[in-house]
Picture 1 (tube, rainbow, N blue to C red):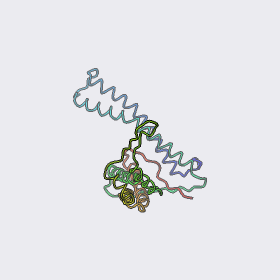
Picture 2 (tube, rainbow, N blue to C red; picture 1 turned 90 degrees about the vertical axis):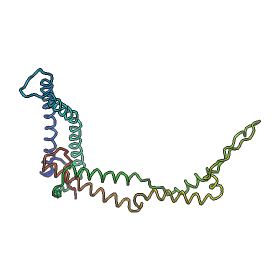
Picture 3 (cartoon, rainbow, N blue to C red; picture 1 turned 45 degrees about the horizontal axis):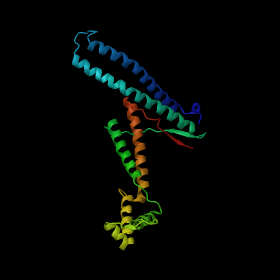
Picture 4 (cartoon, one colour; picture 1 turned 180 degrees about the vertical axis):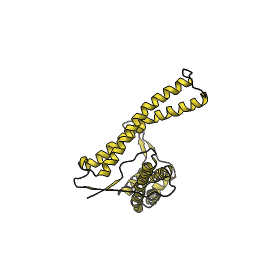
Length: 242
């Protein structure tokens, strides 16, 4: 999609993101000046009636912390703008963009929304981290069980005394006497791992449902940011269709 042909609400959103980036740049200059002023007052180079060294120290720490965090914020905002531009440019010509106005629950704070998003993302990460056994997993287990019974043979060269070191342990003994029973036990454990915390067949559906809820909450997050002016800009909330 040609960015010049984007709907007005998309152009307005991009302008708002650009303004946020410009505001951050201006704030960087302000912080430098404010930190210098507070240091002068704290060190006695500049005196003002009512100055309290303890309060000035706290204010200096606050300004320095904000200054330290500002580059990361500016980097995030720049990344959001570039990501939005790349996403819009990659859309096929003729794509229709529809503005989304998410509903915000009464009394729901930005902190609450972000906590929910973080919790859901953690759940998705856990589900995606559960291994999915390959189709030949039983053959791999059988090979492992067979190897348990394999002795370590040495001294087979000319003039060497033959040595044989047999495997020890109950698992090796079971592999000798009842290899298929051991294979079945291992397969049962693999099946348990692959189906925890939910059955393998339901995992993709649950992941899709969680990601859908994350998407909804991220829209709510931006609605709160726009309404309250709190920091944490998100990409433009639009839905693409053809």
